Length: 266
Figure 1 (cartoon, rainbow, N blue to C red):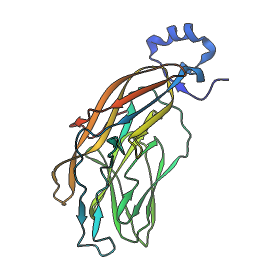
Figure 2 (figure 1 turned 60 degrees about the horizontal axis):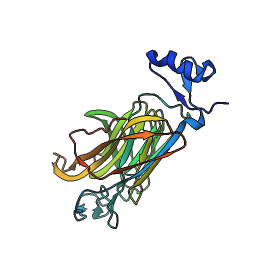
Figure 3 (figure 1 turned 120 degrees about the horizontal axis):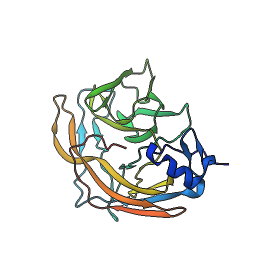
Figure 4 (figure 1 turned 30 degrees about the vertical axis):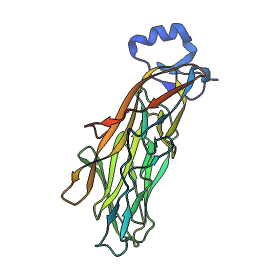
């Protein structure tokens, strides 16, 4: 039996792929990739240079939040310069079949949005949870457009919003200018986020040649918004990778540079 990996080929390639794989490998023009036709990608994202000192946000307006809020946008493992919380996205045009009724959570903890970075499959239901007893107005953007807003508080501790549009969501709290989170909503699962060591892994990647992109929200300050919110210049790097059957392709990102793109694309 074929595994539940679906790849939609371009129409002009359909005849050639049918000749190569046989008619039984197709269902409605969709190629069912066999397990042996996939590989893995692993690697590391490195911080390019000396790391800046960590700072604190001063809170003097909300008694329900700590007086000092640690910045959580940048974590670097000094021994290897491994960069945490980097989105790594494979440039795929097809859609991957993924489970339905998926759920994810974004919580307020100590007046910070946790997790800072996450990726979810398209169609995920996002639960917003107040876990610190403060009042928050959550505001999500896709580019410059508002995707959703929600109020959560000790009286209304949860809210739920569907994530039905792919892309990179920037999530703020309109009451607290230091609160920020990023959610990548992807139509395929060739996405990873670097761990504490700056490393990542993708499994079950269909064989082929791809562009692979590393994207981080940035660490170079570009000024404050009218609401006193500190913004950073996003950083990215793009490399090429070839995935072979049952092999692991290694990728090292060591040249992250500023980009004008807010969304990493996928």
